[in-house]
Length: 258
Image 1 (cartoon, helix red, strand yellow):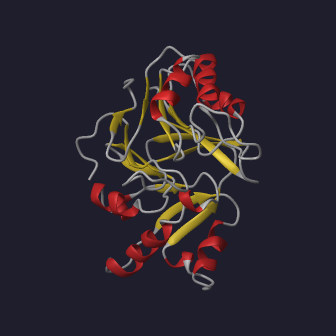
Image 2 (cartoon, rainbow, N blue to C red):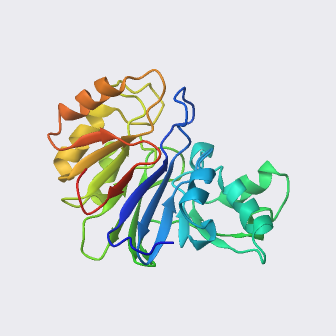
């Protein structure tokens, strides 16, 4: 299914936050494809159908879950059902996430072992790992008790840095290499961020992109009630590179700025 995809490509399956009034804005799900495989960063509510329309889900090399909020992982439930009941024989997919992920999934059905039927769940940790052609760097970010951001690259090319949900932009500095593409949450638009929310706003993202030398900024996870154009302007006030929102269906070559 990945034949013909030469450069790493980001396919946006879902870009919505926990709640939204934007039709079709399903939960966070970002597919990264290359000719030698595909990985998925998060799999939030309603995004499984787009995953299944993009590739055979059992071909995923791994799903990486940034943190244990349902808008970032709950569609592991339909993935689990698909792997177990649709395919004969059933297949398995590797899943890496924070401690307790399997228990959250099992608890939804009050069924110990529910997730283990088809998902090989491993605990994430900070540091580097290689999955197929992808070099993945994982770093802790402030949000929940255990939340992560990711950098994904192939070879010596530029990487994609995904913030997950992040309440302190400085936590992402160490993940971003000069020239990387930054896929960043901007939940509170032009700001300010509500006290205790542990999310980012446009000025935070703009300053982050400027000081780390990001090649471009892709904005995502905007809460309802916040204006896109005002948000874009607040990022551009601090950063003079390309800035845009992403939406489900977008396809972006990581080697090139959008």
